[in-house]
Amino acid sequence: MAVLTASSADGKELIIKIKGRFDFSTHQEFRGAYEQAPHDMVTFVVDLKDTTYLDSSALGMLLLLRDHAGGDISNVRIVNCNADVKKILAISNFEQLFTIQ
Image 1 (tube, rainbow, N blue to C red):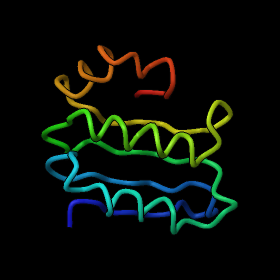
Image 2: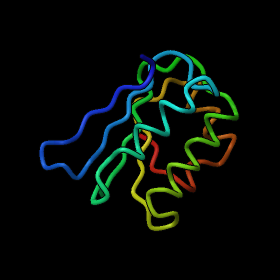
Image 3: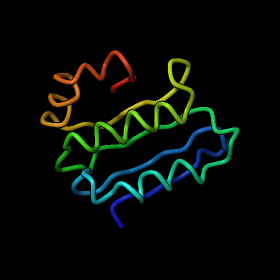
Image 4: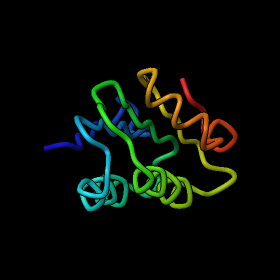
């Protein structure tokens, strides 16, 4: 499985880990991960530590997650990016829409 999820101890944070390629082939898994989360979920964390590739469809999926989480008032963090993934996010100006760590 390319998409793994875990909840924080207090149940307010959903961690979504992407392993391998983050592209259109993970669309349904990724969407299912956050849509099945409880409605009182406050924070979404996308962990890209084990992500080897990111394409434009993945960027679109991140935007859909942001919309699902509340748009401009959402709390979505993208963490553990390697240099290549971080560069793609920077070129796409995603640091203006997400907290990237």
